Amino acid sequence: MNPRHDPRLKAFASDNYAGVHPEILQAIATANGGHQTAYGDDVYTEAMREVFRTHFGEQAQAWPVFNGTAANVVSLRSMTAHWEAVICAESAHINTDEGGAPEVAGGIKLLTVPTPDGKLTPELIDRQAWGFGDVHRAQPRVVSVSNTTELGTLYTADELAAICSHAHDLGLLVHLDGSRLTNAAAALDVPLRALATDVGVDVLSFGGTKIGMLYGEAVVVLNPGAASGVDYIRKTFMQLSSKMRFVSAQFEALLSGDLWLRNARRANAMGRRLADAIGGIPGVSLSRPVEANAVFAVLPPDVTARLQKRFRFYTWNEATGEVRWMCAFDTTEADVDAFAAAVAEEMRSA
Image 1: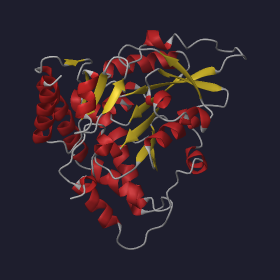
Image 2 (image 1 turned 90 degrees about the vertical axis):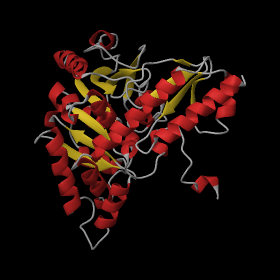
Image 3 (image 1 turned 120 degrees about the horizontal axis):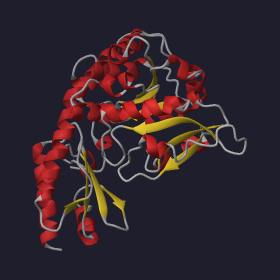
């Protein structure tokens, strides 16, 4: 069997490596029947909008897009004028992993702040929230946070509320990169809105791909006064799907019941299981708190090189030997145990 098509092959590189949940595939197949109006004027997209309102409040407005980078760029562009800027953690996805898209495609200046754990605080925001009225400085307008963060850490509802309150007091808006918001909500055992609407987030990029969808993310405006022109910006940025029903049907399947929660709980549980298994291997150290489905560890470089011939995962920091392992909604206990056994085997050979 070609290993590229081996269904038994699991990776720990990213939750994007996982396939599509069967319930999502069924939703796509169902949506394939008959004709529907193009560009979002279809029954599936209207149902999707209602599902988002159920989770995030009657004021919530959702626009499907193709991918996470687009969700972030469309969101931030709708929140800023051309002379305005976005404050974010130095490790933020919009700064490190989107090929410069916010700045190159969106024309959005990023004002970054170093953080020890990927999380902003009111005090850290103040490091860049200055120069208001100075024509020589890009004007701070938005604070962008990720939950979970790129370092696998979580913002609690209280931490997000403090950030939103401080930002709003400064006249700033708050954007949440929620590519893994489902994992955060599952880990904290709270509704999705508890980490978004209820704490004062203005605009949300909601992730679907990492939690079981084939493709698709959403721009979700929670504060109607915080964003403008989303319809037009989405089109300009080539994110208006003609057959939008196939994105919308996926979101309806993911969010209308508890599929999002089941998938997130599984991924998080497997992250915890992997951390527990790895933590007992001599010579391996966990380098960051394991709070959801991401596990960071430090390995000898030769061990990493050998393991990467057997399993796919990323080296996070070449200088320190830190690696990142991600668990997905379809990761099983057997997958975790086999990987941990391989780590132990390679460490014995180190």
